[in-house]
Image (cartoon, rainbow, N blue to C red; front, side, top):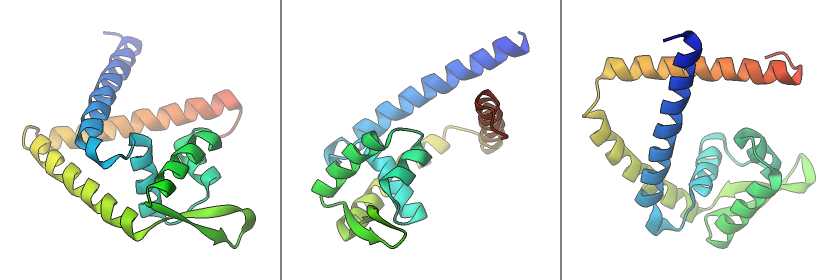
Length: 153
């Protein structure tokens, strides 16, 4: 197998695994009413603190409009709340509400149980090597993307 075909095989495996993970996550959280993108937004806010919609969009590498739709749904469900942004008059900060924090803890607990079952089937050293390989692959993709835009990585 050439290096190029090995990269192609890696891409196919990542796509397959990502699709399977998305399907499992969707069914795992189906009763919560939170979309996979909404779950990611809750996690970003939980980890990094209150953020603006444009900042979330940049981190997700998607449009501000796409994130705004998700944030509006999360706000309607009472999972996030808007706060004034001292750094910008029009772009409010999106923060987790008390209900959002509680729901996200529940989501994390469900995921931890599932990850525990999955970890029981896999070797720890294999997982560490796979994670390192995917990190290196992701870094190479970032350098390629930056080079295509003419931006240093």
